[in-house]
Amino acid sequence: MSVQFKVIQRKNPQDFSAAPLHYALAVRGQKVDLDGLSALISDGSTVRQNDVYAVLIGMVNAIIHELQNGRVVQLGKLGSFAISISAEGRQSDEEVTAASIKKSRILYRPQKELQDMLKTLKFERQSSAASS
Image (cartoon, rainbow, N blue to C red):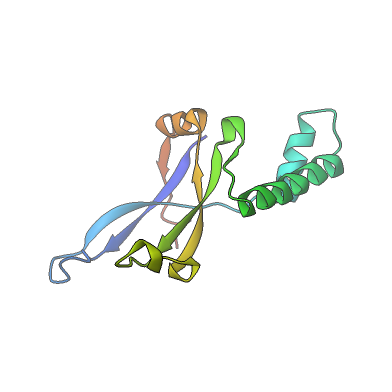
């Protein structure tokens, strides 16, 4: 197995007068949704696909609930999810309110096993015919 990449040309955003350079860009394959993941998981176990799907949907709902309560959700080898916020700075402590918060995001931090997988990836240049 290998991750395919294609070559793209980009200008330097810090120096638009510089000649564009060529970069490798990972080619993203088809998306795998919860239906696909539940089928893959059920194929390797004695659990039926609809049961796996129900558990995955339940997990998503539980993650949402826990994040809404300000908790970090740790999912073992998968990694952790947490809320992060961006806020405007204020002159004093008293001026900082919920209205200062401009954006919230979900941070994902993969665990070591997923990070180690990145170190062993193999890459293959996409054929010219496929990149058109």
